[in-house]
Image (cartoon, rainbow, N blue to C red; front, side):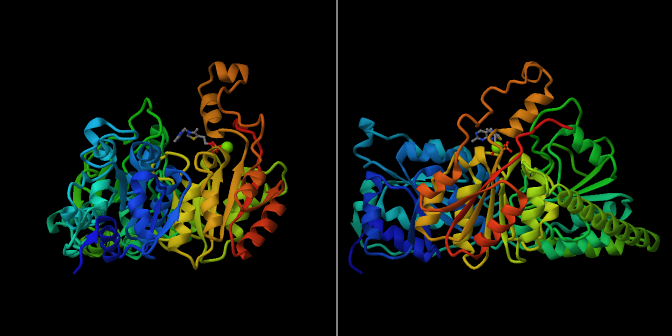
Length: 558
Ligand SMILES: Cc1ncc(C[n+]2csc(CCOP(=O)(O)OP(=O)(O)O)c2C)c(N)n1
Ligand SMILES: [Mg+2]
C-alpha cells in the first residue's frame, strides 16, 4: 500500500467506522482535511456557519440515527464556541466524536494564534479527550474514540488533530473497529429484589429516561408498565420518546421543581426508574423532592446515576431491552392473584384517566384556538393535530411547550427529540441533524424566539442542504420563562413590572426577514388558522420553511 497522508487516513478510518456525514466549520488548521475532502466524497462534509450549530447538528444526527456523529471544529475558539452544545450532547448521552484541528506540535510551544491545550478544554464534557501525536496512532485513536462513544453509557469523545499528524504520510494498516455488546442483563438477585418490591406495590409509578429509547426498549417498558398498572412519565428533560405518547399509561414530562416532584411522588409507594434521571432540578427548593418511605428501584446503563441523589432499595446495572423482560416475568411470578387483580384494576383506571386527561387537554387547546394573539397551548394543539403519523418533532419551545408531549402522537423512539441539557440554541440546528439522519420523515422544529437566536445560522445549512424542515418560531418577543420566574420571586421586578434583560421587543426580531436572508422561505402567522395553513404548506415543501408565530406576550399566572 502506498503511503497515505494523515488527513486521508482519517477519512478512511471514519468511513471504516460507518461515518457518512460529518459536520464542521473549517480554519487553517483544518485545511489538510478540507484538501483531502476535495477528492474523497465520503464522509460528506456539512458546513455550519458557527461551531455551536455544528455541534448541535451532530447531536441531533446522533440522537436520530441511533449511531455515531462526527463534528470537526477549529482550534480553541471553535471548540469554545461549541462547548454549550457539547454540554447538551453530554447530558443526552449522544455518541459524538468531536474533533478539532490543532497547530503543528513543534510550533505549539510558542503558543501560536488560536492555540490552547484542547483536550483539557473538552475534558469535563467528554468520556475521553486526547491529542493524537503521531500519524501511526491515528487508527488506534479513532477506533478507541468511536468504541468509547458508543459503549454504554454512550457519550461524546474528543480528539485533537495536530497539523503535522494530518500532513504526515505513512503506510499504515487501518486496524478494525471494535464494538462493546450493549445488551447487558441485570444481576439476577437485584432483579428478584426489585420484582418483590414492585409486586407488593399498591401505587407504583415509572420514570423513563434515555436508556429506554437508546436500547429500543419501548415495547419492553410498555409490557412491564401494563403488568404493574403503573403510570409512566418521561424524565424532567426528555431528549426523545421514552414511552409511546398515545398509550393511556403515558403521563408526559415529569416535574423539575422539588415541591412539585414531591407532590407527584406522594401519591405513590414505589418508584421504578428505567434510565430515568432522579432528579436534575431546575431550581433548589425548601423541601426534599423525594418523600420518606418511597421505595426506589432503579435500572440503568450508567452506575453513576443509580442512587446518585436518593438511596435505592434495588439498583440494577443493565440494559433495559435485555433486563425488562426478566423483570416483568419476575414481577408476574412474585405477584399473588389479588395483587395481579389490583394491578389490572390500576391499568383500567389509568386507561380511563389517561384518555380523559388527553381529551380534556385537546379540548382546552381547541377552545383557545380562536384567540389572538396566539396562546401557547393553542399553538401546541394545532401543530400536534396536523402532523402526519411519521412526523418527527424537535422541541425547544421552552415556556410554551406545556402539554405538547401529551398532545403529540410520538409513539416510536425517533418521533420526538427535546433539549436534554438546558443549554438553549440546540433545537434549530439539532433539527437539521435530525433531518439528515431521517431524510424520509417530515421534521418540524418548535423553537422559542430567544433560543433560535443563539444558533440562527443553522437556517443557512438547512437551505444549503435543501432540507425540508419546518421551523416554527414561537415568537413571544421575550425570554418569557425568565419573566415568569422573576415574577414568581415577587420582588422588585414584579413590583415595578420591569424585566431587565428579558424583553426582545425593541426591535421585535423579524424572523421572516432573517430566514429569507439565509435562503429559507418564511411567513408570519398571527392566528392559529394561519399557522395551520402555513404548516400544511411547509409539510408539502421540498426545502426548508419557517413560520414566525406571533404569540401572546403574557406571562403572569391568571
Ligand atoms: C446557553 C444558554 N444561555 C442562557 C440560558 C438562560 N435561559 C434559559 S431559558 C431562556 C430564554 C428562552 O427564551 P425563548 O427561547 O424565547 O423561550 P421563552 O422563554 O420565551 O418560552 C434563557 C435566556 C440558557 N439556558 N442557556
Ligand atoms: Mg421567547
